[in-house]
Length: 98
Image (spheres, rainbow, N blue to C red):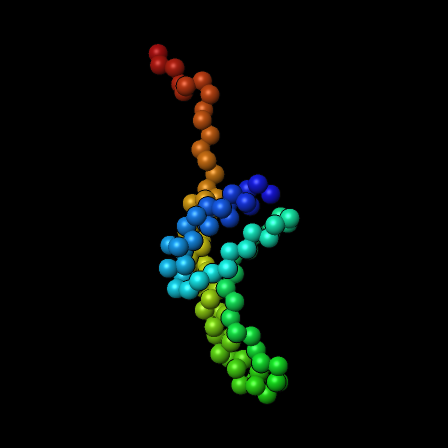
């Protein structure tokens, strides 16, 4: 749980830069009392009218797919840096010279 909070906190500290690159405001949701943390973008949902939904479904699907790609492009490089294992220090100071 501590690792998830640390990752979320590091991303949150860079939120202005992330949102600028993303091109819109994101919802940063720490979800207190849970293990989960969420960064989300919300779009206007489908209308309740089935005919209207059919008329908009291609546009909605296209928007969702585009946002998924943007999430990947913006967050993947940052997460690779944050999640990169830290190098362990070797004990003993290395090999002895003869």
